Image (cartoon, rainbow, N blue to C red; front, side, top):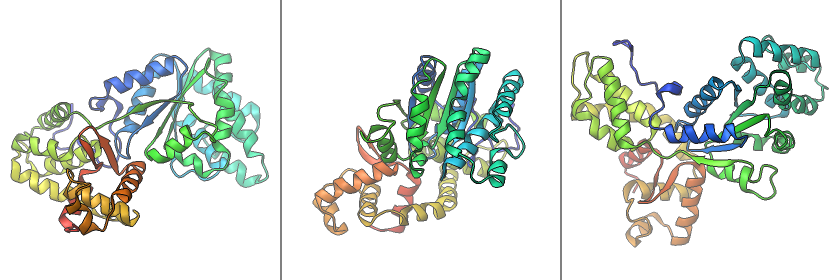
Length: 373
């Protein structure tokens, strides 16, 4: 039972796997692919619930007897750091008899990889001439050996996988091992930069071409989001009241922004109290203030034409190609298409059936507040 004095809406860490909102179809699809030995590619913007869903997948797979690990590749820069990330993933994930089996295997290899302790990072400091690629190949083949010793299938998830593009040859090394493991292991890849994921998995010149089945995460459904927020308020002795509908409309299915605004609203609602629309306005302002530094950094990193199209999406979403939109911003129709593709590729915009829109509702509000149009 949640504590009534603890805010139930986390904003700086993923939700617990059991708390994933309305992701049952995606979770079932990913697990079915894993059972069949297929690789999957989970695509969504940053802070859209990918890590929570991967953890849910790994929990479900572990419950079926699979050996699992979650490898975070964000910011990886070298083959040696890739080895360390995989080593640490196994160290965090493996328990009991399976951990003892893997630990014994790693020690017998005598390549400096270990569960716990200094591990490969310490080995590399003492022996910088070590053949890191050979160690990586051996470590990637670990699921085959685990299957030989225990009969267990492995499921390995690589989060922020697009960052291996920073490491020359890393995707080729992965493919050289993974393509032979469908009988003993499955892989799930996730990333938050659509253009880089396309380059990794759809570029004919890349080794991982068509190597994974795509599973996309869209915005959260409004009804399920409302139930989630309302229930967490109720469980902690509060009522979201008239603030609930504008909160759901404003955050429009963005998982982290829903958590952030709900977090601020909860802080403004006393125990036993009922939130109203004025409380939502205050919560929205507090969320916008908290996000502003990151929003500014993302905005300043965009090329000028992408900034212009972002402003157009924020202020005139239904008239992106209208002359009254293009002229004040100094845009031409052709440049709109290119800039929109750039925003989509960065995960800053979505192409929806109703038309393109900015992914982050707080970025939209921030641009409107700045009066850039």
